Length: 370
Image 1 (cartoon, rainbow, N blue to C red):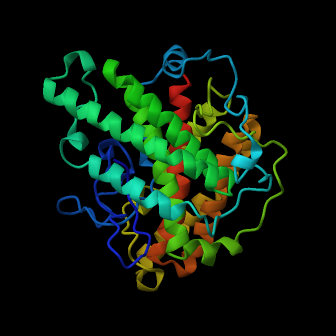
Image 2 (image 1 turned 120 degrees about the vertical axis):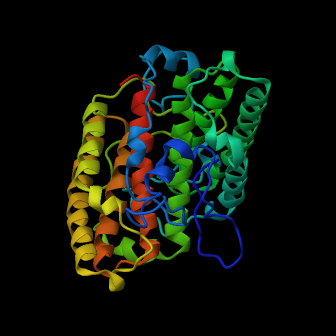
């Protein structure tokens, strides 16, 4: 179902399969040609550090549609204002510090089989489905396929509730919450599916892939090696009250003022890193030729500037969860920049954690009507 990641374990955990549940319009496709410009696209086990996912939202969901999907008023406010659960049930309830590169998290191992199941469900015809066909025009086979996918998503969301409670990191909890919220929202829409509903699947995909990237950086050692190189930020003035993990809601119930600038920033980033997106991320810095080194150094400067822009937009948003996601993006981009002089393939997890989280915010903005 979703992009998978090799956690660096010796055992075959399928965490780096090529196929995901929704890979036609996400980062999976954006980087198929990383191995070079000639010949057919190369499908390999590399992660994708380009933000091609920002272009997948071909159909804009309106605020009214969001109200129907999520069962609320678009003007009701942002996530985090629901009745909170008991703080003793949420390991991250006391986490009010700054978001940083995460070097360890107890939920990564339990997330692996969930992610593996999502990936297995995505194999075959699901990845090749025509997202423009509404449920009213599905063949019996297409209906069965979509209903099966919805069942898998519901199951994965249910299993993720415990992980949202278990993680000691606020931002990891928020990512689990958004995977659950958007995954369930998509599953609920499947019987009446229209093309705009695919945005819900993509948002869930982005959240799940961000989680997998963060865990990949932990298990491959990149987080521990590069994270300490990034200066710590001041604690945020605003943090979201833990939501009920059994029934989380999207963090954007209505469009946020920074959504337009967020999308523009990602488009600018894409335009300035075109050559970098073509590189094979499995080549270590020690093996770069002069041209590859120059492209990576130039991209690092773009990433550094992008980190500052995204962090600032997070502060301007007035939304605690969006601010946490923005800070995560900025800190992981800075960790990747610090890694460039001695880059190893494991460091691509850092860039991808930022890329998928960026896509999650961009997708949430579209769903909310931005």
